Image 1 (cartoon, rainbow over the protein chains, first blue to last red):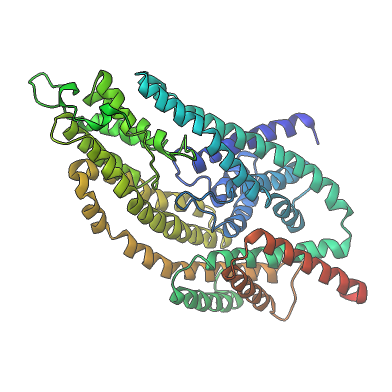
Image 2 (tube, rainbow over the protein chains, first blue to last red):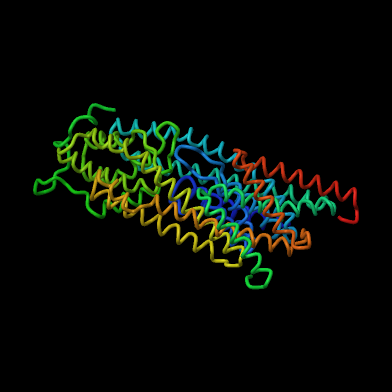
Length: 238
Length: 278
C-alpha cells in the first residue's frame, strides 16, 4: 500500500460521498444517491466499474426499503453503501483482488452505518433549526438577502459530514478487512463466502419483496424465478 | 404570524408601469423551479422544509413586493411546511399565483397559508406513494436485474427513466400550479399517479423473480455451490423465511447479523464434525 495513492483514493471517496450525500438529503434528489448508482459511480472514480456495479446491485436490494416517508428519517443507505463500496474498491486496488469474502465482510462492517447515519441526519435536522430561526429573524428585521445564503449553509453541512464519514469509514474498514481476511482459516472463510452467496442476496430479495403491495406481483415473481432458472439451465439466457 | 402577514397588502405590491398588477413571468417561474431543487437543504425539526419553500418563492416574491410587504410575504412562507420535494413544484406554482392575487388585492394573505396547510399532506402522500414506494423500487428492481444479467448501463437507464417522471412532474407541476392555483389538485388527479403506482407494483415482482434466478445461477457457479441444483431452492427458502421475518416487523440489520452468525456457526461446526466436507 502506498500512502499517497491511498490518500488520493480516500479523497475521491470523500468527494463522491459528499456528492451523493447532497443528492440524498440536500439537493436535486435525482437518485444518484441510490446504492445502485452511487457505488458504480465510486467504482468508476476508483477504476473498477464492474465491482461497483455488482456490489451496488446487492446493496440496492438490501437497502430498498430505506425511503424518506413524510417526516420519518430512514437509515442512511447512501453512507453505508459508500463505505462498503469504498472498502471493497480500496482492498481491490491496494491489497489483493476482492473476492466474495471481502465483499461480505465489507457489507457486514458497513451496515451499522445505516442506523448511525440516521442519527446523524436527525442531528443535522436539529442543527438546521438554527437556520430556520435565522431566516425568521432576518425576515422580521427586513434582511431578506440572508435567506439567499441559508440553504447553502445546510448543503455545506450535508456535504462535509458525508464526505468525512465516507472517507473515514472506508479507510478504517480497509484496515479492519486487511487485518481480518488473512487470519480467516479455510472453514471460516468458506462460511463467510456462503453468507455472501446466499444470506445477503436472499435478504435483499426479501426486503424488496416486502415492498410489493400486490399479491399477484409475488406470484408473478415466483413464476419468473422458475422460468429464468429453467432458461438458464438450458443455456437460453446469460 | 405578524400583523403585516394577516392583512391585505395591495398598496405595498409592486405595480407595473401601466398601473396593472405585476405578473411574475416565465423567467421568474424558471428561477423558482431551479431553487425548488434545493428544497430539502435546510430541513429542520420544527418547521421542516420552511426555509426551502421560502427560498424557492423568493424570486417571485421580489417581483411582487417591496419593503415591509416583502418581509411579510417571506414570513408567510417561513411557516411549517412538509411535503414531497417533487410535488412541492405544484404547490410552489400555485402559491406564486395566489401571491399575485394577494399583491393585486384580490385575496387576503391568509389564503396562501391555508392553501399550503391543506395541500401539503395530500401532495406528500401522492408523491411518497408514487415516487418513493412505486417508481423507485420498480426502476431499481429492473436495473438490478439488468446489472445481474450483464447490462452495465442499467443504472444509467434507471436514472433516465426515474428522472423523466421526476423532472416532468416537477416542471409540469410548477407551471400547472401557476395556471390553476387551488385547482391544481384536479390536474394532479388527471395524471392518475396512484393508479400508475399500483400497476408498477404488479410488474416489480417480475424483476425480483429474475434477479433471484440470476443470483441463484451465480451461486451455482460459485465456490459455495451445493451441487445437485439445490442452490435455487436454498435461496428461495431463505428469501421466504426473511419475508416472513420482515412481515413481523423485524429490521434488516438484526436479520443480517443473526442469520450470518447462525450460518457461520453451522458451517464451522459441520466442518469440525465432518472435516472432509470442508
